[in-house]
Image (cartoon, rainbow, N blue to C red; front, side, top):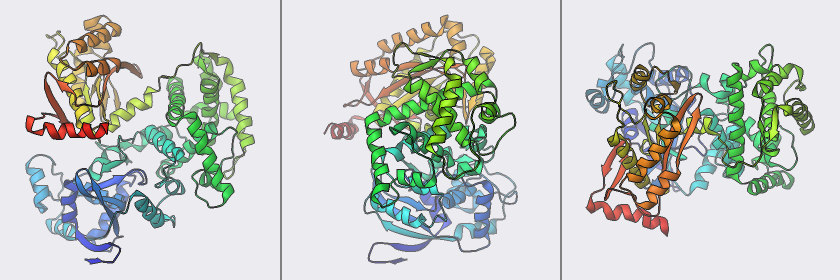
Length: 600
C-alpha cells in the first residue's frame, strides 16, 4: 500500500476482505450525490466476467469518515461495482446459469449454515470462485476533510461526464433548496426514498431499481414514469425524471415562467460562473424561501397524486390517455397537463367536481388540445404558457372554488408508498400489522396484547434515534403468507406494492366494529388506557389517521421523539431492526445522554 502526503492511500484488497467489510456494514452511500443503483443484471455479469478472466477493473474510491458508530468508508466512486460483487456472492444473479459457491469463504459458509443465505444451483466451479474471492480490487482511500471536500472530489471525478448523466452531475453534492426539493420529489415518485441521506451499501439494494422481477428493490416497469410511457427505462437511468421535476419546480416557484433547456438547468443549479447566470439560481432560492420548501413539496406531490388518481380511474396509461396512438418523448405534454392541474388546484384553490368530464377532456388531449412544436432543445416560456392556458380553458369547468384552503391536502398515494420503501432501509422505525383481530375463523375478540405491543413498539421507536418518527401501519402485511391468510378469512384481495401487501382494515372494521369510524374511535380509546406518559399519549392520539390507498383503508399510528426518552409501563425500550429490547438500568445514562444533547 502506498500513501502520499495528503493522506491518500492506494492499495489492492481482495474480494474476500471486501465482503467481510460489507457484512460489517462498513461501506456507506451518501445519496446527496450518489446516483441510484441502476446497473442491469447484464451489466453486473459483464463486470464479474472481467474479474473471472483476470482483467483489470477501474479503481474504487473511498473516503474514511467518522460516524456515531465509528470509522466507516463512504463510497465516492464504485458503488455499482461493489454492489455487483456483493450481490453475485449473495446469490442474487447467476453467470452462465451458475451461482457462486457459498462454501468458498468462511463468511458465506457460516451464513449458509445458519440459513441466512440459501445456496442456489447450479453451483459455479470452486476453483473459479476461489479465484474470484482472491481477486484484488484496486482501492484509493482518502481521509475526509469535511463534506464539501468529498463533494468536490466527486464532482471533479465525474466532471468529464463519462460516468454520470448531465442531471446527475447537476445534482451531485449541491445543497441548495432547489436541489433538495428535486431530489426528494424524484425519490418519492420513483419509490426509492430513504429516511436518511446516508445508508449502508447493504440497505441500498432494497431501494435499487431492477430490470427484472427480483424479491427486492423496485421494478423499473412499475415506476410511474416508465409505467405511463412518459420516459423510457434508459431515460430513467439517466435521471431524465429529475430534469422534468426540476423544470416543474422552477416554473411554479418563479414569479414568471422561464424557458426550458439544458443551459437553463445548469444555471438553476448555479453551475456556471458569470454573474447573470449565478443570479438565476439565487433568484430561485429566494422564491423558494418565500413559498417555503416543505409547502412547495407538499403542493407538487398533492397535484401529482391527483393526476395519478385520474390516470388510474381512466383505466389507461398517461400516454394512451393523451394520444390515440402511443407517442415517444412526451415529457413536455406531461408538464403541460401537470402545470394546468397545479394552476387550478393550487394557485386557484379549486377542487375537482366532475372527474368523469375531466377524464373525457384529457382523453386524446395530446392530439386535439395541446399543440407543441416538434423537437427537443429550447422550450420557450411563451409556448409553455400558451399551451398551459389552452388546456386550463378546456378543463376548468370540471373544477369549483374550494370553500376554504386546506393546508393538510391528502397527498398520500406517493407518501404511503415512500413509507413502505423506507422501512426496507430503516426497519427500526416501521411496523406493520394486518389488523388487531387474530386471523382465526373461530376467534373474534380484539387482541389487546397485539395492540399493547404496537404502543410499546412505538415508544421504543421514539427512543431509538433522537428526533426520530416511528410508524405502525394497520392494514399492511409484510409477507405473502399473511396476506393470503387475510384473504382466506375475509374473502378480500390485497393490493401489492414492491414486497408489501396492502390488505386494508375495511373488512375487519365492518365485521367486528360496524364501520371504520367506530374502529378508529375504538383505537383512540385503547391508546388512552395504555401505560404511557401524558406527552406520548397525546402525541400518539393526535397522530392517528386514516389513508386511502386505492380502495384500501390503512390506519397509521405515528410517534415523534420528545425531549426525554419515552417510557412504557415504567420501562424504557429501544428497537434494533424489528426486535424490541428493554434498556437495562446500567444503560440509562447512555439513553438519557442522547436526549440531553438534543436539548442543548
